[in-house]
Image (cartoon, rainbow, N blue to C red; front, side, top):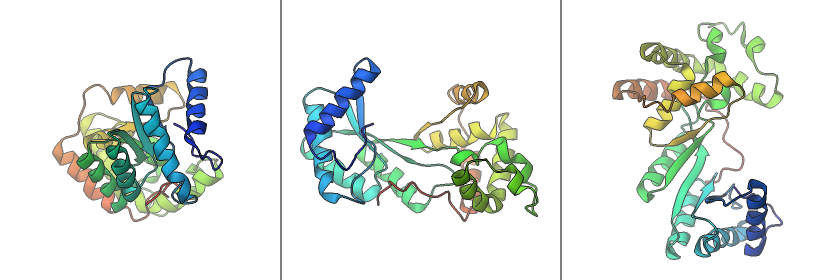
Length: 249
């Protein structure tokens, strides 16, 4: 991914950034993405960013291009611009999970499907909310143990403290589906994203978490019934995890 910094305002600067990334990676980079859109803070920079990824593709510097944190409206704009230059948008990365599937996210998923773009779902575990980490709180209707279970990170703690009380119906359903399938809550949450046609990317901090992600790729798929159960439970979650500040409309 290439960061859309304020001072990167020319295609040459973006090509230099790609070259620096290739040097660090010690090899060819096959896919380049714009890490976010400049539409929220410097709209005049946006067209240059689109030109840069098209130029990289046209010059054979990369095999495919994509974007990240582009909302549906901005994604359609960059797609149309690139299509006019016969440059396909291969991937579009956005925040997506059982606790962030606001209508905007569903619109994004539908648009990706219509345009033939592979949607990549980041934060599929909802900042850890969709793991077994908070299992002790699922049946704690009085919220007695919420503070003790929160992470030490002030930002993450603040986000989760407001979300946990309203997540119990969803977490109970997630636990039930996991038990029915002999899987962990994390595996079910990731599998739900796969069932929606997205390619989830999961951050891991230890071997157990890494092994859990590997098990998500063993061919397991949720049934239509379980997908429906999770869809309905997700609708009961009234306080979606905060959207990324870089995500545009």
